[in-house]
Image (cartoon, rainbow, N blue to C red; front, top):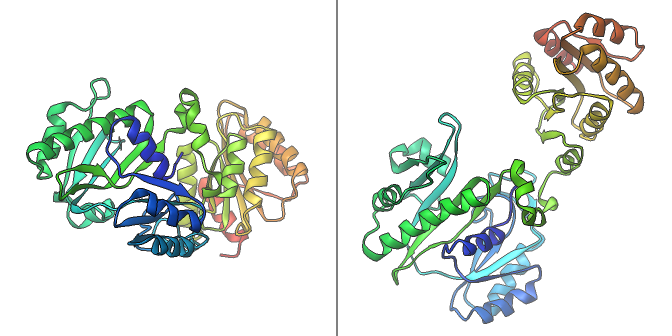
Length: 387
């Protein structure tokens, strides 16, 4: 689950990570009043959306007066902010953060995420703050320093020191940076995060080190341990179909293709998407209905997929392991009766009682094609949309 920058900074404050003073608002008139209240000569008006690169899209502006803060807020609020992370459609800005400006000496990048190859968290830092870390990794990988963290031990002070001095910090500012890095790990671990970034972490001309931005993603699997996190969710920032799917415990991610996919198991779902692409089309979604595919999950899956107007055909690819294929076939038939399927449907079932399931589907009277394998299914669904 993603949260806004201002929410991330509130969490940072709990862990004694220094951040600038700021106030959130949804109106332009309040932005001018907030500028005055902050009492600084420069303030920053920042769009609050779940995407990076806001400055490049015009979502971050400097204000040197209350009137200027009000004017920037008026321009930003209600705009469809387009960044490399929002896609071409952009994201509607409903909230802004007005915070005091900082006299920046240098910008740095700091992030923590899971290294899936090592199955351990890793802290990454770079002197190239303010830039996309992916761009830095591609063009200047030598400028990224990493420390692998043993989960049972946490980030050790010697590791934080190595990173801080590697960034060029010295003296009191090095102590501040070390403390921030340790606090960031404590925050990441304590809040059960999947990703945490400060981009940029800054040093100021008066000798301070602070987080100028905050990107915090929570691990949804641990939300039950943090009931306070539920209230931080902003569904307006999420795809409506993904929000709807989450109500039925379906793992759904909307994509930009034309073939709707309904699969059980994340690995099989990824393989299905790949083979559709290989066959000449593009998947419209990632949809994992879980191991116990039944009438309810399949029905809701069909509803979610068909709500996407880009879908021209549906490929159901399910492995019958926990649940026998004949039961899954009957579930698909019942679901197809409950939902008006207006596009070609291709079904591939493999596993226990797969042959019986095939007979059930062929005799059902439901307009569908039965595939004999993964490759056959992908080719049939691509042919069905005229590719």
